[in-house]
Image 1 (tube, rainbow, N blue to C red):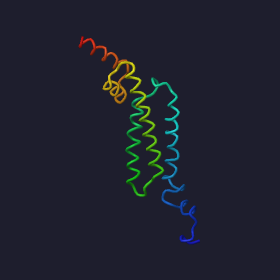
Image 2: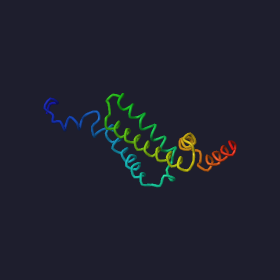
Image 3: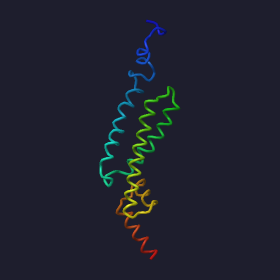
Image 4: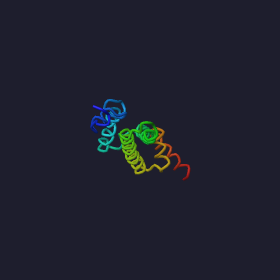
Length: 134
């Protein structure tokens, strides 16, 4: 059968991003990270890792851009990376809002979340700052 007469399915099957390539299977498997992130929406916020979600946020959006630059463009990989970044941004928002509700300033909450300082350390610093101002 000639390429001109090949069915759409056959062309897709043999394409550069079809199911015979890593360009197909890598994003399919990466959806597990997105699903895990979505399942973490039900977890208590104090058990979430800020540094892990910051890394997922950054890599998700960096790789989304990269997927649209490379040849062949990989829209399946771009979509999974975009949703990975979105899921991580929701988690980061939850973590920062929780820390602010405990009395940390926005700056302290972001530092605690992104740089991995423990909440106990940041709370001690917050209390020391309050005593200095008083």
